[in-house]
Length: 134
Image (cartoon, rainbow, N blue to C red; front, side, top):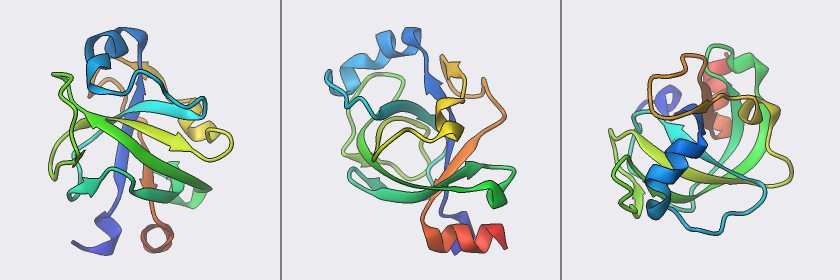
């Protein structure tokens, strides 16, 4: 997998209606500094616990914010819990942020599913970001 492709693309924050439909697939208790996020096709199998250090508007990697976030739980539209983000799957993930949730995440729209928001945000590590930002 080329380094520049190792990015998780976030399509939006889960709406209350979406949470009602998929809630059984995620832990009932969620940290205050977490978000349930709709994630586009995964570039690889990504284990629960994986951390990311950079977040940015997908179309503007030069506008990145340093963060520290961790995948805590993974499900999909049928509310089945997963032990990882499967390669090639669209998923719904509980992501915990250290400190405040970055503005670029907090300002994402609440969506009921995939394809509702084209202004996506990306998560990656610093090595991938340095290649993407040029």
